[in-house]
Image 1 (cartoon, rainbow, N blue to C red):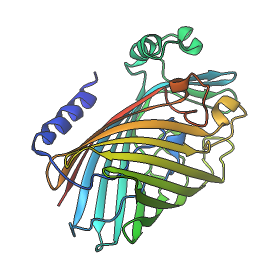
Image 2: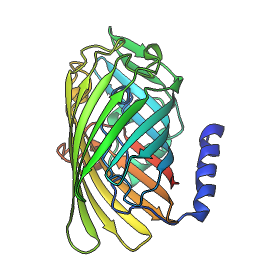
Image 3: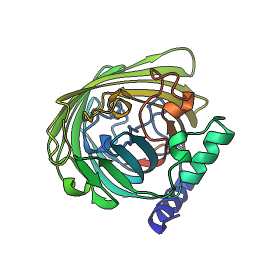
Image 4: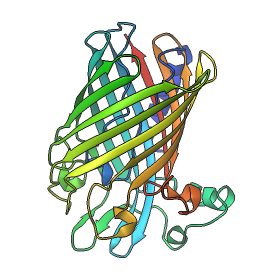
Length: 322
């Protein structure tokens, strides 16, 4: 495992030893980590502003995503590490502003053989594209349009605000700044803006539902073709608070493809299933673990449930309020 990745995992787990708390009924803050999709704004699943009147929150997460997509003239085969540093400022019991700073590292990775094992032994099938593709490649390419190799650096920074309207409803707005280098596929090279509405409702004791609809206006990418002007988002999470410390989350997310390549296997709606676990460890700190699956979960037979995304996405997040 690369030293940066290993060091961050050790740091997060070391911080976790003192942890036990925050709001248990939040969804998992993750998104589709297809390399092209990460270049554009996607509205995060909204959280209610902190009713405890904490001044704010710091968060750090590491997400690892391995993707292979070889269809016609399209060749996407890489592993991506994304470190996201988040900061939230409370503006009272019903309003907050927030900032996300991503750092990206795209390369050949180490998960190819593990994913092959997962397909054969757990999902009970094999992926023809993986069967005939050498492991440890790093390329994002569409013939005649673009070609990117390994790269690392600052991604596109996002700033946003959330307003609550009671204990169940909130609305968020965000702006993505073109701070990443588009020539190395670290950013789109343009501004994006988005709006979303989130609704929360109890189901039965310990169970709750979180739903989101959102819309993002994408600026034309400088190094990618045929950027979609508008992209819709939808999400649904079922949340089970097992006790005062432990929460399990089952989550579905959907969004349109960010660009049009002419390849149906990349331009269809992107959908993922995520399973997450949150440990409430103190009244100010939490630790989260999660993983996401794409269409491989159903061998492509249920695209409404899971469709286009990385073959594997896994992450760990630490949050602390102050």
